[in-house]
Length: 309
Image (cartoon, rainbow, N blue to C red; front, side, top):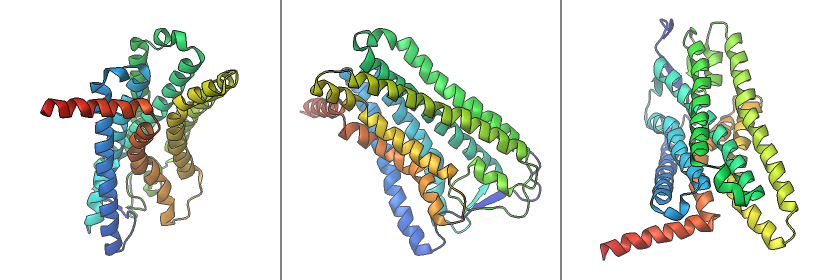
């Protein structure tokens, strides 16, 4: 894992140094993490159990729920542990592994959101051909492509990072390990690492964002061509949940990486948003704004209670 002979652990400073504040934060983020698990597991079970939701849109939503479970579970358990721990340490190898999975799951979600935007475009612009265009083979291929592209991208960045040497300053002003936080702690030349990370971010995250913007430009154009007001409203309602998720994910992500660093604890608000809070909100967004999901939940619960009686 490279030459880490000077020390074997990083110190994650976390969200606060005050013990009482740490306890309050532990209780808050424990509740958020449990709600994330319950909400996304419920979404997975409902989509699987209800045949009315066996469509491409909900196939992608099911993948998003599974991805949110993974993305949140990469950072939340270690953050909760450090909030109750005095040492707040993490092994260098564990830190690199966490950075890899943060990058991989975040990159996969970016690709998946772009795929879901394309799915909404096809559904609105060609409703009669929707089932033929968004075939099962294409949907599975798009999901595997999203996972594969993100994991290859993360692997390339991590393989270059494992050879870095880390010196005396091994305290990280963050609640989790990310590549952008690791590089300033290295006494090696990280210019190649920063260049690769910048290229990956531009191609992966900005690239998928441009694809989403292009899809929604076509969606808006199609909706405006609909003559009836009710038809426009119905068409827009089918993509409102996805649009909310995109704004939360990309908004917090862009603000986190584009704002200049000042050392303020407030800088961790945006990473917390896309790493911990957004995975909890996504099931709520898709259930509260979606009549089909709410109806499916009622049908599943009705079948469950009927089976008990």
